[in-house]
Length: 436
Image (cartoon, rainbow, N blue to C red; front, side):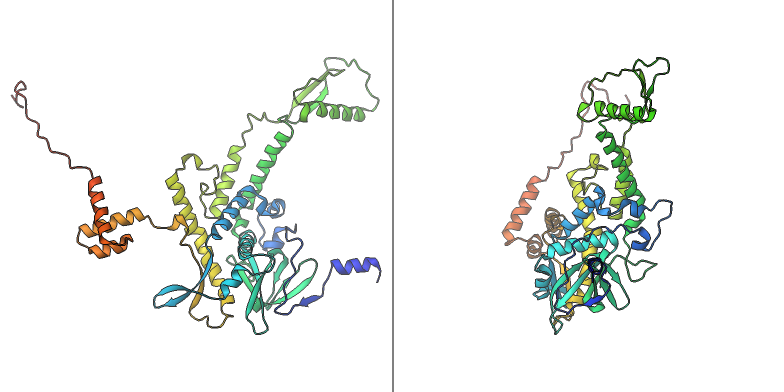
């Protein structure tokens, strides 16, 4: 085999490899955007003459999308996974070996990193994949992240293509997180971001325009030509194209970059006609508002939560906390509930896993905790109305003794403003009675 054939065999491997259950998948050297068009990625063509998916590329490189994804992944990782067992009508937390697998799924990365990558893939492509590594008896020992752009779902298996290889992974060894369903490919999910690729494209182009202006030091494009009314005083080159390129190069060199606002002396008379907008007149701030609002809307996150410009002028501490709580309730919690159900495929491989589920501990998330001051007021009001007993009031308020309840009650009564005295105005002696 010659060198060319060896290189071709290494780059274009077509033989599908099947790994043992306990073998770990190779880490891909490059899991980035592949550059193929939107129809191949999503199987859904976006109407229009422009292939917005290809033009945008990796949606994670858009600043608004990256900001939302960063918030989602950071927030979700604040709630660690737990296992709950159903006891009567309630779910109580119990110990389970699956937590060790979720917290340390791979020798090269920890659980938070895996969760971060799965959430990124899930939102950006609508699909996320984790392969279960297990012992010969089926007991899980770890999880392998499979970048979504390197995975092809088939009827009874998944084809994983890292580093030019083609690895067959059995269906039962893959946890497939799907965002809904792709109507043109029922084996895959479909990210809702595909509906706003136009907006992402516009947002990127608006920044490209602003960057071009700054890169050109505020100097708009234009035409530089000889003044017809004034004859040239310099010797004109016999080749007009060559002369034009020389003048163009000198003009750009003298008036851009570090030479901005410096003096240039021309040996002939020239006119410069600007073909662009003055940067002061070209206000691009509004061009970003609509795309950013729609991007945040797709993620079900208010722009205030991720410090977007839209709405910040009316943001306060109270409504910012309310918007963050809404983002948790609309995005993070439903996502974690879905991921918890998907992890049940891993949970069922462990013995004695009946009536158990994977959930997430959100007890330390401040915006999700009830307002204790309002709970105390409600409990005291119920006690004063003889709706609950003193002991029940103490329990609701989370106090250790009933004396503390009475002290709270005394403080509340002391802080209450006194009733306004009713003053009856008496007519003065100098003032005649009404109707006189």
